[in-house]
Image 1: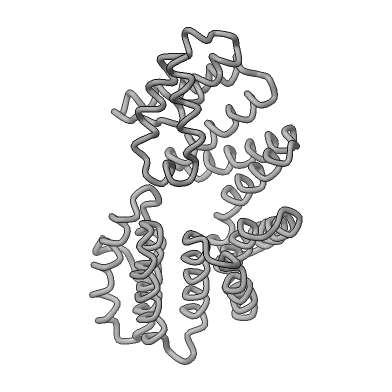
Image 2 (image 1 turned 60 degrees about the horizontal axis):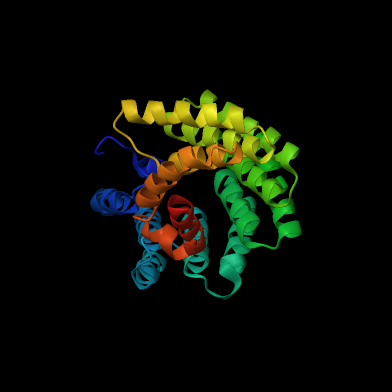
Length: 291
């Protein structure tokens, strides 16, 4: 971590482990305070707050963002955008009124005005999450247009995430063929970025959409391939297990699916966030494991 430049804060993120991310940013804060420009203290604090919010420690995150406000230089537009983004993310995760939309809109406007394309794309992508469906689609398309047209590599890297978000929105709206096309764009981008973890997630999503489209055999083969890869590196993914079970059920192989549903329930019920967010999903797994 000592060799990570202060301007590459985002490289310290471990998206699957916000507690470890918080530890990394807290350690980096020492270096940020030693930097003569003073530019990075507020930004580093925003990422600590983001990690705290991901852990549902919302009061801690609010206090950390207050500290970031206090450390912000008068002409630090980038730091101000970061604070707005994280205020919005905390509000969204905490389920506060408006889900942070006002903060995200302010972040978008300030980022665009100050030439911070990557942060502007981030703000638009968050508006694509918190806004109602039609407005959300417009924000996602706006974010994609900027990501593809920008000369900033950090903005360009958003294409895969945006395509993924747009794919799920189309899937939820019942536009499954369009969703599949977007999932395949995501997969191609992840492969191009040489990101094994996110490539596996993209493959999972393509297979999930194939099951929706009635291609359960093809989906099952891909999910089993993913499971074998994970087992080879001592990894377990309850979502892969769940999809294997769902594919078997879709193919009429209920007896074969039952113990797989049981494994999926055991793996996914350990996820506190999933228990809070989708209890009915876990209950379905438990029921299918027993019947």
